[in-house]
Image (cartoon, rainbow, N blue to C red):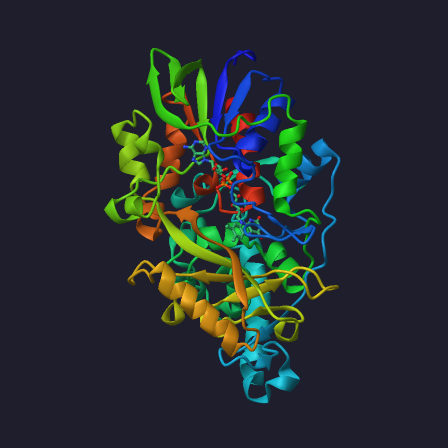
Length: 463
Ligand SMILES: Cc1cc2nc3c(=O)[nH]c(=O)nc-3n(C[C@H](O)[C@H](O)[C@H](O)COP(=O)(O)OP(=O)(O)OC[C@H]3O[C@@H](n4cnc5c(N)ncnc54)[C@H](O)[C@@H]3O)c2cc1C
């Protein structure tokens, strides 16, 4: 490809900024990043409070965040944040230790069985499901793996493994099929409470590509990365180190692709490019979600029939975050997970609340809840908000004040039938077709590293 080509990147979140970084590293310096907001970072949003930053979006990473490490190295920064720790409560607010046999005498047989199943599961993933953890979803529905290893060197790997088709199944069914139902007790903490949906609805591929065995063990051992200035800082730093920082406040009203050129109308002015990379939502809004403020690429692109047909299969989660203050005497001494509330029967309830700093009481506590499930009516925003505030009272950590809140368009994904029908391979076959490349969360998984890693691969494969 011509290294001078003009490349437009839509979105200044992890996917868009890292696309810029990897293009630049490969010698493509004629890129422009258009960000509609007045800040970069997207779902990595770390506002200030009392001279410190708290997290409204992404919080943590793990040692296998190799793309995030690339960004850190590029900028000369590191993960220097507070060490995370957590405890557990049941839905009545009682502190529990769910994995401690001595504290759960009646549950000892179940805990022992879970331990055994965990061992079996680890072995199955290494053998029967070899190739399961490759970043991205190419070939999975056809029983292949095709991508880059999750290693610092990210060696290209390809192979046939018909068993991988099982990854199309909802995770609960996948576990049942393999006789390891109880491992869900471990996976649910860093999965459902982190807003990625419920195991009866979400294909195992998403669960296991994000929470591969090693990553899950890092969560269990709390071997995690955080950033003192928040996750937004990573992307602010990257933006500051790029040759062409994102153009903030870019309102795109139209994208037209004709005669091998891409015409983008930004703040009323038409700009000409050769290629475009979209990291903004590909999701096609319906009447309700549009009235909820969601905008998809079909709303401003000259979207083609194949784009509309495929992207209309995308669904998403509604993940709500409140930032609250508490009176000093009501302040939680640590973060708490509430497993009882991570089931669809408790949709809209508080699943986890997070205390970032150990050393001072005057800090913001953030709460997390989901209010969407494929088979259920969405819990309205205000109702969910009230449920969470009531739950905080039940937990004996009542909020005195809500200082920030947002409801996030979160974790775009497709369900099992479309996954098994080869949705990912169809979209991958469209990469570049209309001088357009698709990146961002839906193409891999909704976390900082997998989106950045997908951008790396996109640049590696097509530029
Ligand atoms: C509450 C919460 C907790 C999370 N916790 C973690 C965590 O602990 N660890 C982790 O790794 N990840 C976490 N994540 C997920 C992570 O933040 C996202 O997966 C990641 O930010 C996705 O990057 P992205 O660039 O694909 O999308 P986004 O971050 O959504 O960025 C997209 C960007 O595109 C811009 N944009 C959209 N439409 C347009 C348009 N039409 N024109 C111009 N610009 C546009 C947006 O303003 C945004 O800046 C969390 C997210 C949330 C919300």
